[in-house]
Length: 228
Ligand SMILES: [Mg+2]
Image (cartoon, rainbow, N blue to C red):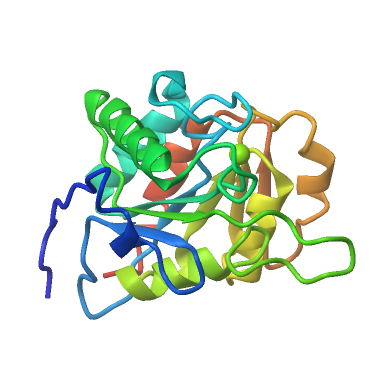
């Protein structure tokens, strides 16, 4: 049963309730909907939805990427939940803190809303990369943890979902979460990550490289048959 949108703004002083025991962030604006799992559109944030600036730490640095907004708006129209999954190791590195992160998330939401779009959920991992030979911290892409949690929270079908990002590790997180489609955005680090992204392609994982996210909007239509 569809329960609709629960708009719950995160206040700068109330961030703790969004941070779980594993240290990762979740901000949910939509509920699980329907008995049948739905496709989702997973998006990296920096370099994908907004311009890459390197450890973005202030809301005024937020600049939306028009092609990504087009994909978000189309997903919204098709009833496909839009989920942002973002590594934010600037927190573990002490470059910014959770209240600053909250202000940035609000700026991203505002920029997307201004363009007519809506993000249904945001997951953020504050952990720094592991030392060589050590396992990835929980949730940090390419670990699939944030995507799997979102799939559970929103009743998404990973096998029918897309992930788009500007790094091969975004696509790898998708592949490890059971997704079958990855899109390397040409923005951010996308140009230099092309070969690494192509290397992830297989019979069960399609990889699109070099095309703007506006072109992903048309591919979202293909997800409609057979779901719901
Ligand atoms: Mg990125």
